[in-house]
Structures are given as C-alpha cells and as structure tokens.
Amino acid sequence: MKSIYHKALGEQFHHLHPELQKKYGLTSKQNLMVLGQGRMTEIRGTPALVRPLMSTGVKDHLLFAERGKDVPFTLENYVYEDEEGRETISWIRRFFFPYAIRGFDSAARYDEEKQCLVDHLGRSGLVKADFDLHVTPEGGLYMESKANHGPGGMSMDGTVTSVYEHYEEEEGATRVHVHTEHPVFGTLLMYEGLVHTEFLPMTFRNIPQRGVLD
Image 1: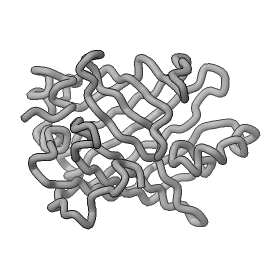
Image 2: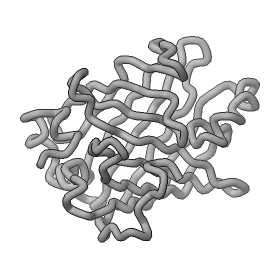
Image 3: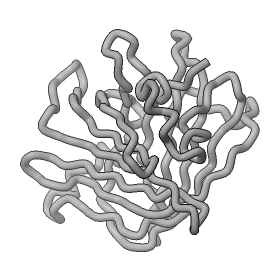
Image 4: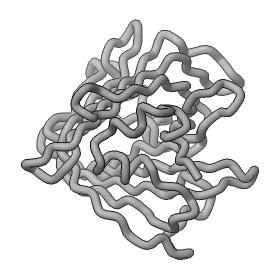
C-alpha cells in the first residue's frame, strides 16, 4: 500500500532522503504516529495592523498573530481512514509562545480525480489547498500550493503556501520552512526551524476523535 505522498510523488518518492521516506511513507496499515519536537528559529509575517483580524483563524487553528524567535514546537501526524474510507494524514502543530499556545492544523488526502495532494486547513477544513510536490536534488521535499479554495469553493488562488523539508545528518533532525503569502498583505505566516522526529505506536487513545482536527 502506497502512502498519499508516495502517490503524489510517483517514482520521485524513492529519491527522498531515507528518513523522509519513513515519515512520508506512513500508511494507516502500519499503526504508527509521528511525534516531532523542536524549536522554530523564527516565526514572522503579517503587518501588525492586520493581526487583530486573525481571531477566527486562531479559533480554527489556522492563523495566529503571535511572532517570535526560538519558539518551542511540537508536531503530531496520525494516519487513518476517514469516514469515507480515504487515507488521511493529520498535521497537528503547536507553537509554545510565552503567553499562549497556538495551533496550525490540517488534514491531507490524495485526490484521485485531480491526481494531486489536497490539504484541508484548520480544524474545520473549510480552506483547501491543492499542492504540487517534487523532490529536490538533496533529497528534500518541496510542496507548493497551485490552487486554494475557501468556504463554498471560493477561489483563493492569489494566496500561495510553500513547504520545504530536508534532513540534516549532523543534527539528526529535519529542517522545516513554511511560508504563506497573500497578494495584498504579503507574508501571512512564515516559520522555520529544526524538528526531531520519532515514531510511536498509534493506539485507540491517541487517534484524533473527529478525524483531524482536535
């Protein structure tokens, strides 16, 4: 059984660094979860005057106004079949600021009709992004949104999200860089840092109870 990332990358998948193949090759049949822990070197973006408008995004674990450096970070990936039997991977990200814990959650699936990876963003999943994926010469994974849709299928194609990961042998960890840019407001969110990853048995107790997004 191929993972959703293996499907999206095709034969390129085998050119990923072996540690990234382990992470992005997980399927629901393996009954494993990914736990990542690290620090974001920097989190920045969004003009200060616009940040108060992010309250809805904060509640939905989609956007947040806090910015900083050397921010503790955790990531949980769960691979499961959703209510329609589709292979799904949840991304549960937590950023630990001095006075708040903020989330950025999503659930990724492979769309057989579109032949691409689709990320359902936020706890609600009402914002969706179609991603192109490719493997870099260094064995890293680069993903960039090629179409974005808001509630009711509203087009948000001006907004672009790029994600880049590569494995650093000396650190024994993955370097992560995520950037979301709006055509008017500029960078909505950018974070980058180093994440150490381990694989743990997935039990009934740690499976997300509503699909992704709790």
